[in-house]
Length: 451
Image (tube, rainbow, N blue to C red; front, side, top):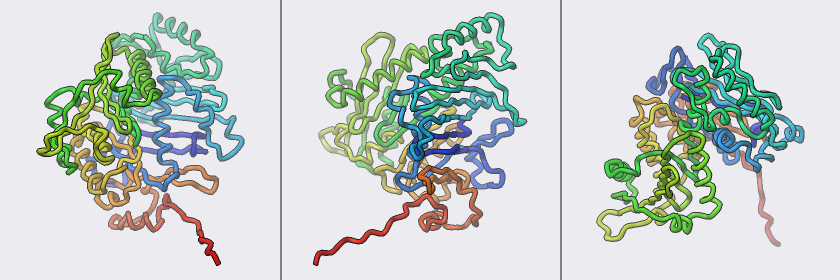
């Protein structure tokens, strides 16, 4: 489960900022929103509010960026992604870190880089202990070869193999060593180096990032009649007019006519790299790209199997394609995947969850999500402008966060829990009045009148 996301000198974030999913001990409402692992209570939700251009979406981009660098290395187009509110940031390190659990072990993984030079300067992985201490698992500094922590104690064979991998990797300034340790490497179940595999696979496969323009998931939901029936039943509860969902097989050529070439290239390039990194014999992915919805299955060297959605409306004779649906209906299919997920220990990170949805649909989805995953280790982190859900008693105070730009135009992240308010206070009213900040502040403008 996700514990913390921290970032420094990236896009609108200047100094270190942090979003935490650790529970506040003083809040006793909605206890089902917590999962206890060892002595630590972890929240299942985080909802992030803020004005337009406050930096909410950049928080989602932090998580997506970490995943992207793990798979591809530092992208060429990231050279200008440092926080550009001061000249000194151009050559200052940008820092990214995730804290999370895998199989009830607590980890902190991160890296720093000078983005303007496309140069990773440091990378680290620690196991976090319940007494507050941290055990170093590996560290990598600038041009030096990565080194294992003193307490890892690998076998002689593992130590020798690691030394070869580390020496060969030295000087790879745009790549992450955690990724290298998963590139075609195999680990025995009792290996002392198994943490390299466990941590990498959790970040890549258990964090699902969804934004308003492109949604990606690895659900099996669109590959069986039973699950398609369930999706049809779910979509009907949102009163969209859609009564049944089917899939239709299409060719690569047909897909290329629906998707821009650069997007199509990125899709299959990502799939190829993910298969190589995870050593999977087969990969199933669902992509929602603007007006298109595609299920892609790749097995070995075979041609990809591609299907798209066909939707039926009530008793109408003709079926409808996905691109013919309203923006709100299209957006719902991102959310339906989240309801259908059967995987344990997954975190969905969603930008603008309410995009194109009526407030009541947003509320309905959130209630369904919490019901569907009440007993699961499933987390939802999302950005929104929808203030009405503050008053639905859906979230705890420590699950509500704000992002606001300060006087230097840098984004700050803070929790509602820092404000001392009565528990019966109408939160949305206080938010819109500016009590918690993170709302637009408009400048005065006067139209010039002729004559």
